[in-house]
Length: 85
Image (cartoon, rainbow, N blue to C red; front, side, top):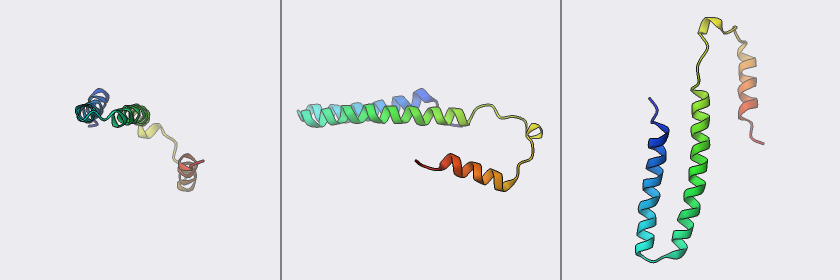
């Protein structure tokens, strides 16, 4: 079972708070600013990934209700979805 969204975000927060406290104790203002920017970037990326995870884990239609698919069509669909632009 996947971890809860809040638990993951809390873990990210704890990691960055610990690193920030170390930089603050060393009075390294540049590292503190870098950590702050990195935290915001990582939090945003993590929230997007969690949204994708939640969307993919959404309710699944019963197997019998789904029409049979052609394997070639399925592969083409996967290729279109995963193609980077």
